Amino acid sequence: HSTRDLGAMQRPSKKKNAPPSGSSADAKAAPSGAGRLPLALSLVTLVVAIGVAVTARGSDGSSPATGSSREAVSGTRTPTHRPTGLSGIPLAELPTAADLEWRVVSESPRIYVRDNFLSDAECEALKKQVTGRLEPAAVVQKTENKHDKQVNVRNNKQIWLGYEEERDTPFIHHIIKRMHRAARLPEDDAEALQIGHYGVDEKYELHQDSDPAHDVARPATMIVYLSDVEEGGETLFPLSHRNNCAMNWRRNSTTGEKVFGIRNCCDRPDMLRIPAKKGRAVLFFNHDMAGGKDTLAEHAACPIKRGEKWIAQRWFRYAPYQRLVHPSDWRFDGLPAPGLQSLEAPLRPGRMDLRTLSQKTPAVYLIEDFLSADECRLLIDLGKSLPSFDENGMTRRWVSQQEEAGNAQIAAIVKRMHRMALVPENHGEVLQLGSYEPGSSQRFHVDSSRGQGVERPWTLLVYLTGDGTVGPKGEGATLFPGERSRDCTKGDDMSSCCELAAQEHRAGETAPGAAKMLLVPPKAGRAVLFRSHTASGVLDPRSIHGSCAAGPEGKW
Image 1: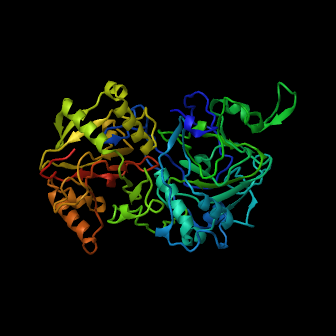
Image 2 (image 1 turned 90 degrees about the horizontal axis):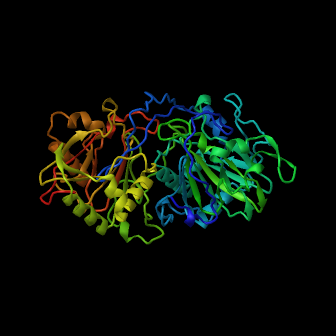
Image 3 (image 1 turned 120 degrees about the vertical axis):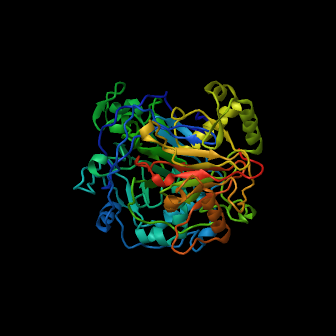
């Protein structure tokens, strides 16, 4: 992937994964455990699959965090609410980002960048929120010593936002919800938002964010720069050169000067350096696709040479941590409501933003206009020209690797699918195209099956036809029965559940005491991204889903 559009970003040649090892220099006590999964791909199904040689862990071993641990870890305190430029604006009236498609910086480790993730106003509001509250940063050396101040390791200042502060401040949870949608992780699976400040000569030496051995299991980290920096302050990933940047004194071969730690590396052109830019977000994964700790995700904050750097940082977890789910926003939660497209651009969801249909068990997201009308027609025409076979109610076609690589439009679609799933391109099955004759359906199933050697943590399904309306029998819709899967899977006839889900959808309510089923109507260009495994690698039986009988026009 080219990074030429990322300005001054420096990127070395691509490296192979190193075996997981090491310990965290910055860690907070947390549930541990990560599953082992790569990914597989298909177009009406981008599926995530793993090679059979990789062994999955059987359980995430997670445990809920207690109130005392939250106090120790996140440094929560009585919040100090200060007026900001965004204060007092209701959640549904806060402006949002115009484009949230990630750019791929590295696939090993997985690193993604998005400029303008936060607006100038949002950056300034977060800085104002913590005015006068910053404290010297602490580094965790071991589980019993939560806040050991090690100035040789880290000498900046920071503050954790309080639980009530996140919960009760609309612009803050508006930003946090965007972070979680962008990372494809549930809102309650994270530590409190941290705001940090670096002045001249302040830095953070080489470290890893996840340390399951000490109860600190963080699948991913997001850093958003809240300011530009005149010089220095890059986020450094030394990759295979980590030993040259570790916390030791080394003598400069040119000047003879003794230099400590990352100062040996921050000016080297063969390092991956991401410059700080106001509003820019960096998302990186601390564990690889197989669930092992990715030592190549070791990183550092280079010293500030001129100016200052502000950041907002979110550490995601494998299991509930703060246990804080933010209020629903009709613009981003649930199926699209009438009137959404009539909103003006700053309020309307941006390009490639996700809608959260279900945060977990199952985790389901929706992306409108993922494909254009021309791209939908291209894929339908391609499907009609390919050999097909019938399976489980659907007529399937597989797009060959030669076709994927040789057709620029197909290759661009496949790359977009992998970016949307945040999965490397080598973790994917070939593109699959499927069609349904009128009245044809696909019975309930789970996309991943360890017993058959097919482990698919993610599926991306894209509708090539449909107008998004819900018919009286849920014609052509994808149905996730969730907690009602046992009732819906009695026998092979799913029509009654599809009809009931359609009735509940139109009425806007479920029967008393009944759990809600998730019905997603087909719409040309609409994508549905969902997990078959939890983030820690455990198979999610509630990811079971099926396709309701197609209407008179059929379905692609």
